[in-house]
Image 1 (tube, one colour):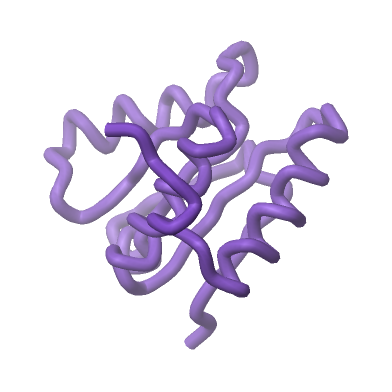
Image 2 (cartoon, one colour; image 1 turned 120 degrees about the vertical axis):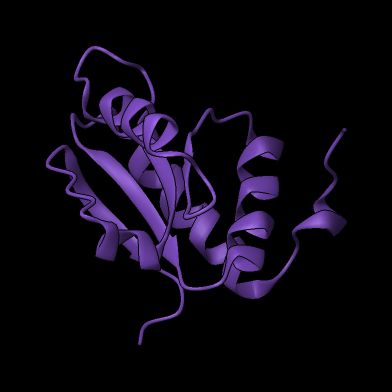
Length: 110
């Protein structure tokens, strides 16, 4: 499905994408995590990222353990081109540890 700006346009998401693109285009070695407690918010962010052409994995509680491990291993792989991952905040309670990330955007702080 072709995403349009109306599928993700909001002030918060616009600012996130602006800051994210600045980091992403800087070609730094670190990776970026975008997290929120609401899956719907991450759906809006994923639409915005797709509209910019950026590849990213998603990590949420609906995944099997095998799927979670595959996403985590891909994100932790320094050779993989993926530099951003969307994570539902509750997954950090599932033992998610990410050592490759140097930047994190928390969209709805608790």
